[in-house]
Every structure is written in structure tokens, then in C-alpha cells.
Image 1 (tube, rainbow, N blue to C red):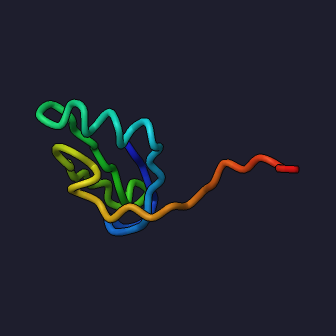
Image 2: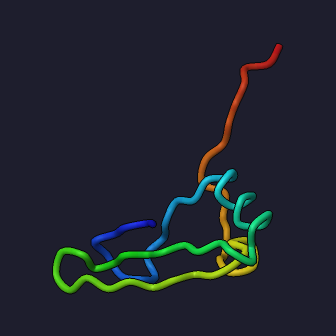
Image 3: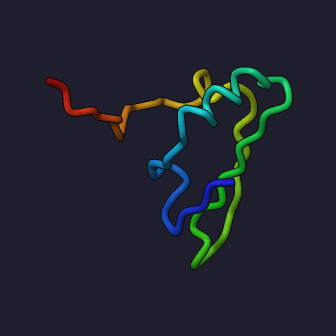
Amino acid sequence: MKTTAFSKSSPLYISRDEVAFSEDHADRYRLYRLFEFRDAPMMCEVVGSMKQKLILNAATYQATVGG
């Protein structure tokens, strides 16, 4: 479940592991999105592979100092 006080279309963070798990278990995977929870809570369900259902943009990087 991912929760936001903002609208359904506001960006959310999803990890690489969550995306991979959703691909491996697409037939059973569900992401529940609770939004506008402060004023008028609503929920939507995204079913299947998150790679196929969401527009994914890299938001963080893992960096190592090289020589």
C-alpha cells in the first residue's frame, strides 16, 4: 500500500525490489494506492507488473566513489 495526502496522480516512490517482485508475481500482484486521505480518502488498485502499469522514472542513484 502506498499512501498520499495528495491526488491519485501525484508521484509515488517504489523500489527496484518492489518492481521486480511485481514482475515475478504479476498474476497475483496488487498495489493499493490510498490518496487524498486527509480530506476525502479514496483508494485505487494497480494490478500486475508495475513496469507495465506505471511510468517509472529514476529518482535515486546508488553511488560509489571511484579512483
